[in-house]
Amino acid sequence: MKAVCHITPGNLHGPEMNIEYYSSYAAMSSGGASILIEAIRSKPDMLLCVATGQSPLGLYQELVHASEHEKDLFRRIRIIKLDEWLGLGTHADGTCEQYLMANLINPLAIAENRYVSFDAETPDPPEECARMQLQLQKYGPIDLCVLGLGKNGHLGFNEPASYLQPHCHLAKLSHSSQQHNMVTGSANTPQYGMTLGMADILASRKIILLVTGEGKEKAKQNLLSGKVNTQCPASFLWLHRDVDCLIENEQTA
Image (cartoon, rainbow, N blue to C red; front, side, top):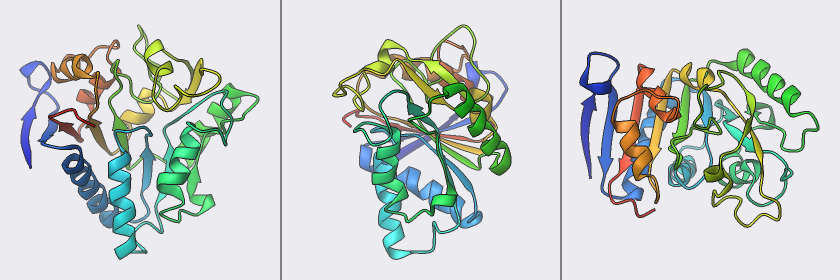
């Protein structure tokens, strides 16, 4: 079950964010998958940007289930990875690469030439970010971007700061990001990550933001206040014209 409302930043005239409240993680995931599948049917060759972590996992599982009944649905899409830890290697547990391969790329049979990804083993991270920016310019803008709300309000590895980087960049990770459950069991705690920038995200034609998980109450409050602030990068989504913000009420995931 979901409840829907539309609010504007600071209760002033401006962009509206479509906010939907769901009674469970499964319902939120199903709702997000329905939005995404409808968008793919409208544009079968879309560029889809995907985040990792627990927040979008249920949505991806819904996509895999849909592919079992409609095998050609995802054949023409192109996928771009939102971010990647630096220093873990490509095949280590906890990398965004391994997560996406296991949960999305392989199950949906996405062709290698239709997957755009940061190289987790790059010897030159700034050059790798420049390469990804060129790939985004070649295939973009992003048609639909799937995001999860970070505990400190981050999007990807766009961390709270006095200034937010607009394009692909090497990011110094916050303590909150370093404690992410994807890497808490790693031998070495990542200090940096590579990510698409805020301007790249905001250039997306449509955005789905998933708000679920423990420890995010403050970030959720900052987001829903409608006040755009670099200390809560997710608040910049108020500047976008087409955002579906899906919130799990019970925060049990």
